[in-house]
Amino acid sequence: MQVIDLSQPLGPATTPWPGQEPLSARVDATVAADGYFIRRIDISEHVGTHFDAPAHFHADGITVDQVPADQLVVPARLLDVADRVGDDADYAVSAADVEAMEAAHGRLQPGDALVVRTGWDRHIGDGPRYVSDLRFPGIGLDAAELVIERGVVGIAIDTLSIDRGVATDFVVHYRTLPAGLWHVEGLVGLERLPATGALLIVGVPPIVGASGFPARVLGLVL
Image (cartoon, rainbow, N blue to C red; front, side, top):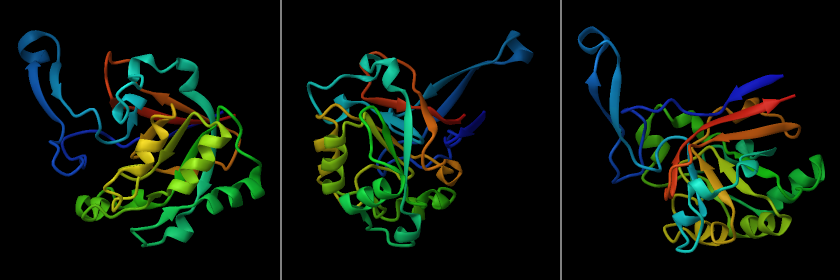
């Protein structure tokens, strides 16, 4: 068994969505002074490697704590478009991309998670390039429609958002989250994940009423 960590380290240097505050931490106690170490964390629900619950873009959607646990440990189906994306910050993953993956590795099945590798995580150490004036690859609406039809439980990606940076209308969020899918955004290292045969484990805490939350996301290869 191989365990692959697909998560960014999360700290004050983690690039947030433009206009949001980065994580901050205040030390409330130290081992030297108090006999134990504890901090208070101030953090956005959507920073770093994080989970989007349907409530994020749907007033009647479920929140993080309401997502069934069996939808957080699911087969991972890798769609690797990194070679096609290259340096194209406006690339939209298409239904044709998904169908090409299915032709090579089998049809998406109900209960799968579609995991999209664009290669954009190589820019994470360079905040301006990673955000790139809100220009980075994402999912196209036709691809979103197809994966909803296939019955996947969620979509995960190695960029700041499921939607392309230039898609200021968040059309994919507004289509997939009301359909009951979840998202994971900000993954890293997807080149280590096989095309099929891995489980995606989304370790998001059940924060009551949360629209999303940072997550430790693992790939488990048996």
